[in-house]
Amino acid sequence: MNRREFLALTPAAGLALQQAAPAAKPNFLIILADDMGYSDAGCYGSDIDTPNLDRLAAQGLRFTQGYTTARCGPSRSCLLTGHYAQQTASDIMTPGLVPEWTRFAPQHLKPLGYRTYHSGKWHMRFRPLEAVGFDHSYTLLDQFSFFAPRTSQLDGVALPPAKLSDGFYGTTAIGSHATRFLESHARENPKDPFFLYLAFTAPHFPLHALQEDIDKYKDRFSEGWDEARLKRYARMRQMGLVNSPMAPLEPGIWPDWNLSSDELRSRVGSAEVSRAVAWKSLTQEQKSFQRTKMAIHAAMIDRMDQEIGRVVAQLKAMNAFENTVIVFASDNGASAEQMIRGDGHDPQAAPGSALSHLCLGPGWSSAANTPFRLHKSWVHEGGISTPLIVHWQKGIADRGKLRHTPSHLVDLVPTMLDLAGGNFRGSLPSNAPAFAGRSLAPALRRDVAVDRDFLYFHHNKNRALRVGDHKLVAIGEKGAWELYNLTKDRGEQTNLIEKRPEIATNLAGRWKQIDEGFVASREASTATTMPRMNSARD
Image (cartoon, rainbow, N blue to C red; front, side):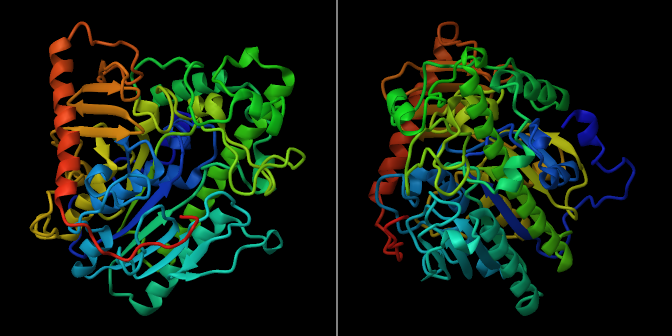
């Protein structure tokens, strides 16, 4: 999508727009994609069709500096608690005991009169209803098959495993349950505001998509990831989303838990590519296979966008669209992981079908994360940057505009509480630390910076701290610190560590103090006894 096409969706200047938040409490729809790159939506420069997201962006806001934690589970922890994952350990990927003061978004919103719903991926230690507080939940626990997941629950009751003959597709099921929850809300609780957490598994591996969606993209990526990156970057510059040079491919870096090149060739085939090498270095067989994989990735995002459109249509049908704050984000950057899980991979199966198990890989992941460095699990910008769209027809006057203030998933609970008229401090137990997040409400009204002390990152021993425009980042526990000024270098190409050692030393000390403080505070708290999930697949 080019700038002209995007602006065509934007309302003309001069329309009478609401300047202040309405008196009635707004509804909240938080939509989370899984392993979707920063530039994977049309309104963020992609060549993938996302008309529903594009409309939300054109009539809402796009944040250019949205951040996550670099991994699925910790990001969900941040989104639902308003605290960093290291503070609560409420997801299944962060080690440690969960402090008893931990509270989740439904527990903050229900005292304010909200009904709360969840549909989709979970990845949390605790049961959605009894512990986290959702009124209803469709919980998809098996993330390794889009066509025949073995483990899912509806309101805590196990559903029969899906069969290939059922015509089941996970993205559609998540959208369908969300729509049913909204239909029920309109019938039974029409006067109550609601919070719906819509957590898609797409486009997380394995690359599984409906054939009709794959066919739509079969010829779209023939030019390869190098050309795709350049074109995305040009669109993003034109849209004003980025102003920094694009990071080059880094073929020497890949997840160390990936299958080896030999294993990939043996189990997937000779056309698989395990490194982010130049497209021109591939064989014709490799190019054909790799463009097919990207077509499947695009198809998964396309179908997710269609389901988002279906949920939005339900909001309109129940006259709730105008006063629903809709937020869209991804849980981390696109993934360079190449593994085979679940039911395994049949090399003879059609790519994208139920019996296949393919992963996007570092070449296309680099394109999805344009223009940033690295991928999911790293805390360089490619791993932690998310598209962040906020739409609220009744509350946002500055439609179609950008917001450049840094934001993070920890900000969503404080933002919802602020817009719902809640008490930040009073919503937490007296022994709980203040929210790590900040309310983004001021940035919804005007293009202003949201004041914060820092943004903290720590995943898989990768470390980073952002204070103002400076970011200190390192790969691994023993990796050397790198220092960047993100004002014009979000591609992290000019390391300032030698030129500004005093800044690096200060930030390194602060990161250590913050990191140790989070762990110490959590360990000093009494562990919670909230009911836990008991599925072997969670």
